[in-house]
Image (cartoon, rainbow, N blue to C red):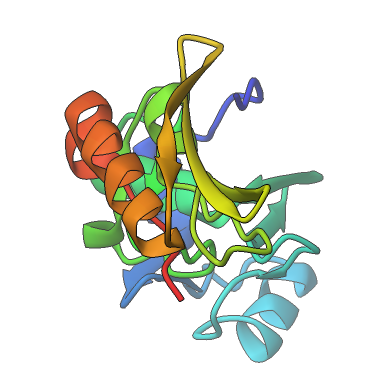
Length: 171
């Protein structure tokens, strides 16, 4: 959960345009040398860079923010504690790819790469076991002949629990 306070929608709209999932620096009134330098080198450019986890981050006012949080605030005027990237790409900040979520829903939409190639499926003794974590407890869904069968069991349980947030990493 992000605890740092975001700038208001009005402040963000003074600083940035939103274009195709990115924030673009707006020019500033050329009052100071700093403003003129900003306009010459930064205005019109996409703000931010990628952090080590694939998220776009933007720094201004001495604070680094995740771009998806700024974009959500810029668009809606408020920002929920958790924002989920629907397509699981942390650099895809198009507003239609962002949605509010609970921690559980966001976790359900995470990739989980394991040796079987399927989310929440593992091999045990030549069989493939499907499990799901519900309310902090691991629930056994069954033992199957193939990883595909185990994945179907996981996806059925996940869709029942999390609906549109349920995803499975498929080969």
